[in-house]
Length: 189
Image (cartoon, rainbow, N blue to C red):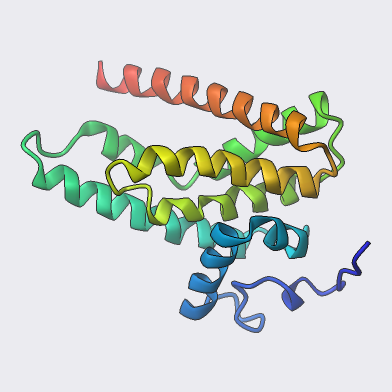
């Protein structure tokens, strides 16, 4: 078992020496590490140390997705889709809800041992795929890869098998999708 430093800043790739703001190089390096070698990334990821750095990372990745999607929507023949406005309003709370659902499934059904914070960190860093999911056709593949990233990370932080963890992530995604569709339907109607 590898030794983990007690100071989470030692390994948090988005941390700028403890100043609380991510460096551009740190951000891009983190995104690359998550996307290219998720197993190594999640094994080295601190499981504690606060949620601000992972949350900033999530907000940056998701902002790229939102800006690109908004631009594509405005350039298209239909104009601005109301779903984009709904998504923009929900973006700040989504990782907290997603992590809560995933953590519940991991603890109750997979006997996971990780904390809510470690689950939240996995959810935020798995959002690295949002840097490219706005690209037509890449988006669908990216969404499946995000499910894999979340499963890989959750299996590591919860010390659980990948198969059962993947089922928990898919169940979380289905519940989350159902809730999102119900909310969108009620707002648009």
